[in-house]
Image (tube, rainbow, N blue to C red; front, side, top):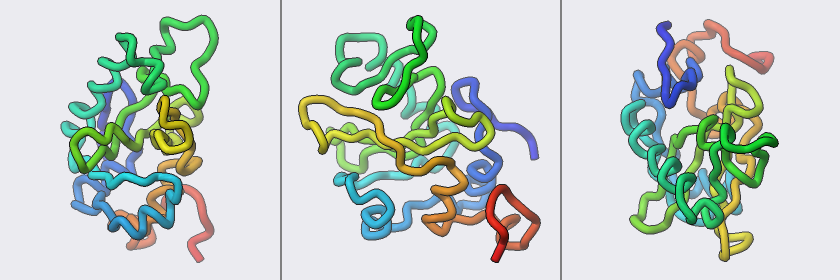
Length: 168
């Protein structure tokens, strides 16, 4: 499978497969509430690499102005110390799901600070402290997030292997 990039980061092959097969779809608000109980606003799953790229540009805008404190986004290259949660390093992440309702300003992102091959999934949190957003871990890896949502590519369904798990 060819490599696909967003913002200079290699898209996990599982996500590429899910997008190509039309299987990267929102599983429903009830299921999202089960998986991310603290996340209160409805999400829209970005349906293409181009949409993820486009939506992720908002992080650049927020990181480059005074709203970076509100949204907890920074550029790691402009810091002496590594950017850690609850802050997002916009140079090592991109958005995969965004607010369904205009103005909610919430998102899920793949965060490459932990593993460039299978990045963790983080979500914006404006509910714990409404004065400012923070980023929280949703799943330790994208593959774990996809598995808990029941999102599988046809290659996984056919048993051609994948990362993690014993298959049983």
